[in-house]
Image (cartoon, rainbow, N blue to C red; front, side, top):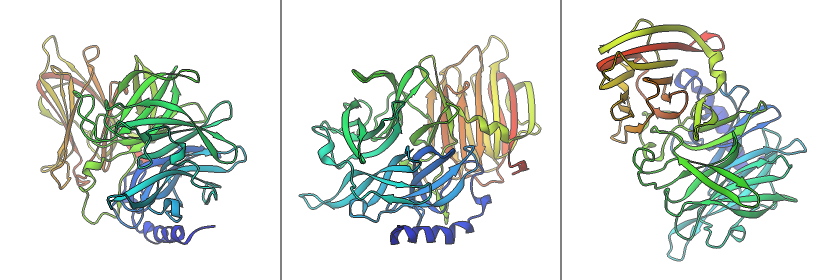
Length: 498
């Protein structure tokens, strides 16, 4: 039965959402029906289609009481809008239905597992949220919350666990048929940990173990975990809050963390390596799924919490998802590349090879705001160029810059002149590998975003931009002399130029 609160949200989005024209949205990136979007939720396959839920406040472009918005897709590029799936309409989730996961049940129904938040006051009179885990079961459109909610609360935490920071279950069914979930928690030392739970009969869950803990090494609270097997290794990803900077690998604030290791039921998870997931300005709360053809696909909120107050005036939606990425491992690193389905959307192709660059140049046919472009840069001889810049989304007033410094081995994103109206963090640098005398950059533009994939996915960097769409020039510039190859495709939607 649809509650009054949920029906109100559905009526609102159906009334006002259609008034936002497609021309005001990205072409391939998922956006909310209307209002606010943040973390991806329930990214999973159900009855042969990919479902994506998301943290949602339909009534404004600001964060508010959390609902679950709902999209589905068959190709990770074309997103069909479905009615809001969850609303805060019970005592245990009256302050919000927060992040979680989804899975198809053996009986053909879909189970959503989410964090319910109930607000009260602590002994000092300050507002305090209590977080529990809840479930709802439905048919891919309508969901009924289980009468026994919450299914996990403070009594199910290990010693020292916090009921204030206990959130974001990611659920899956293992090959043995058992259901598992990983959940973020704050521990007694004030930092984060990832807890593993196993499902038992009648929506009951039991604590298995702590998979890994922060011990104040990587930030504080660990949010939005995921746990999966990839190319012979076990991967644990999470989004730490309040990180301190570590060289150019991890930046201060809310970040992303990939832990690569091994797992056995007897020994648990053994961490072997750690790295950032995305090195840009806007990427948080990633979640993955396994496709029917065996690929591991990741999506994330392409935004960050420190910049959410910088948005276009009078925007009717705010927040978008990153382009879904295929994951693999190579040489002990997480590799990320755009989903291969994007290649089927390529239109006109322009190629320039062995172009000498000394100073700033532009090239015939190389412009646009909805494109897939690969640039390979190498020295002209034994003498190394000092730097190389690619300027995109450019006109006489605006530009977004990708700058490479071979002597430092750094790549820098600079969106200072990218149309954002506030003095917020606009630049980020990270270390890259200069391989065989060249660096290869794949650049995806989609109206309001830039995503860069370095050296066939060794690293990725994302940034939101709000430059006016008429700013579509692209130029290349070298300090010294360099050679460059460029392959650029316009991206098309359903065979039509956009």
